[in-house]
Each structure stands twice: as C-alpha cells, then as structure tokens.
Amino acid sequence: MRINDSAHLTYCTNIHPGSNWERTFSSLKAYVPLIKKEVANEQAFGLGLRLSNKASEELGLGPRLSEFKTWLQENDIYVFTMNGFPYGNFHDERVKDNVHAPDWTTKERLTYTRRLFTQLAELLPDAMDGGISTSPISYKHWHISQDAKHQAFTKGAAHLCEVVLQLHDIELRTGKYLHLDLEPEPDGLIENSDEFLFFFDTYLLPIAQEALVKELSISTEEIVALVKRHITMCYDICHFSLAYEEPESTFQKLSECGIGIGKIQVSAALKILYAEDEMEAIWESLARFDEPTYLHQVTEMIDGKVHTYNDLPIVLKERKVFTELRAHFHVPIFLEQFGKLYSTQDHILKVTEYLKGKTISNHLEIETYTWDVLPKELKKDLSDSIVREIEWLKKIVMFNA
Image (cartoon, rainbow, N blue to C red; front, side, top):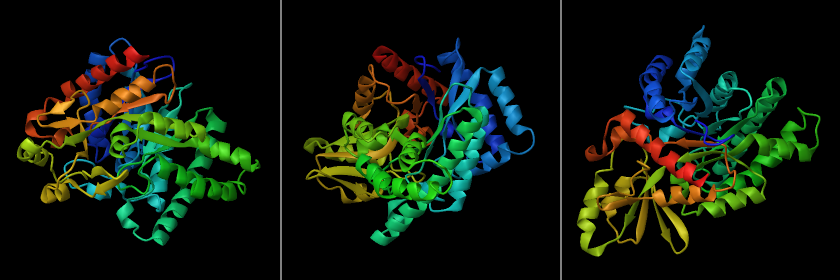
C-alpha cells in the first residue's frame, strides 16, 4: 500500500511456504486478499513477493505469468519488490547457511536473479521503481583465507555487472527503473556499511569500469553512476542492529558516497540484557528460541568491536558473562519485550524517526519470517499476526510522515 505519493509498505511473502509455484500461488490466494481487506481495503495493496528458483522457473512456463497478472489485477494487488535472497526452499527443512547457496560466485545465482528481474519488469506497474533484495555475495565461513574472499568478491562483482547491464537495458526499453539490493547480514561476506562500501570501492566499481566500458559507449564516470543507480543496499533493520550500527550513521555514510537504499526491511532482533539475579531465567528464555531451521547468529560488542557467534547453541552452551547480546531471530516487530528478553524494536523507531521529511527508500517491507518456529506462547494465527505487524508499522510511519 502507498504511505505517501511514492513510498510503499508491505510484508514479505517468505513468511509463506513456497517450494514451487503451485504452493506459492496457493499461499498467496489463501492469505493476501484477506490481509489486504484488513489493512488496505480501500486502496491497492503492494506485495513483497518471494519466489524460490523452482517457483520462478515454473511461473515462466505456459500462461502462468499472464494468469498471475490477471489475479493481481482482479484483487487490486501489485508487486513492487521481491526477495531474491533464499534460492531454494525456505520452510519445513534445515536452511541454516544454505540460505546463501548458490552464492554470487555461481552462474546459478546470476541466472535466478536475472529471471526474477525479467518477471518483476512484467509485474511492476508503470511509474514505480522495483527492487530485488539478495545475498551479501556469500557466507563468510565458506571463504576463510584472504585469497578465497578476494576470489569470491571478484567473481561476485563480475556477475553483478551482468545484472547492471540487464537493468540498464530494461530501463532503456521499458522506462522501468529496477535495482538490486545487496543485504548485509551477520556472517555474510558483507556484514555492515563499512564492508558494503569496501566492496563497492575495491571490487564492484573498478571491475564495472573495466567490464562495462567494453559493452557501453559511455565514460567511466557514467559507468560509476550506472552501477550506483542499479546496485543499492537492502537495509534490514534487524541485521544492522546486530552490527551495532546506528541508523543515522549508516544512512549518512551511504548518502555521502552517492549510494541508495533500495529497500528497508523492517525487522527486529532479540536483545538479551545481563541481570545477575535473573540469569537462569534469562538463559531458559533464550533457549526457547533455539530451533534447527535457520541460522541465529549472536553478536556482542567487545572493546568497540562486534564479535559474532555462528549460531545460538554456541552461546547457550558457554553461558558466559556478558553485558548485552543480540540474536539474529526475526521476532514480531510490535513487541518490545518477551518475558525476560527484549527486542531491538528501538532501532525500528529510530529508522522511522529518521524518515521524517527524508526519503531514504521508497520500499518498506516487513520481514518476520519466523512465525512457524517461534516459541509456542508467541505463535498466533498467521493472518492476524501479519495484520497486527502492518497496522503497528502503518501507525508509526503515518505518524512520522
């Protein structure tokens, strides 16, 4: 739904199972019209669409894309953003670090993303920009040595240049502006704004200037502008709270470098505060969030530097003394406290406060994908939970608009 003349607010459908197109479409038909009726009954409802590689392949077969466009039109729904981070199945099986596979060093990731952009260009209404969020190149622990990281960044940048060419061509042919939004996260090859800018300056821009000059008859300055136009950041609030970065600092860094934020993913992490007399209850509360499907990295600020534990079981086993921990578990954004635990909801409020009078991104997408694996007492009806998140954020954003 629109929150002003240009900005759109939605939720990401990676909440729903979507191993193939039939299951994806069934979930959309079951949930989205009901949710729209509750939160945007009198206006068109924008959707943050998640397609697995298989679902995307199957959507391209026969009349399916045309049928989907008809369904969207009949229900007053439009697609303006996609989640292209998880390539395969994202529910009902172990995901963990496989969420990065295949990574940007592979042709498979490139082919998948290019196909998504072809489909988004078909689905996107005129006079809107469209974006796809994606992996931060790869998973850090797959590339341990400096040489391995260098090779991954080099190959990833080369593949991103091919996406830039595709998006430039789409804009020339259709007038539709599309962008790929790299999503930093804990233990990704890109975890924070400094690493994001390092990748841009050290790999993406130099490689693009060499590669694209062979394809386009434009200056190196124009190539830099083209890359910055089509490769942007997906600012996931949960992820940046885990990096202990203040929103204003991140936004200013990117602005000074002329790099945009294609999408803000509205999400909250778990926050664990040390309380000496309550530590047994705190550890017991945290253990309820230990589940086998997703990675739940835990971060801690030590002497001004962020230390990352690969997954929640490591912290639960060590039970070391700490001041504050933050865990990568996307918890409901409308809750500030979970018994003895807290959330980083304060970072969401800081972002919405910053949005007063400032256009940081046209795309706001709620991304709480963990409803199936939340502790039992937090599990509610899925539709009701999604509606509650949207209404909570609408109230905050509309108040700040």
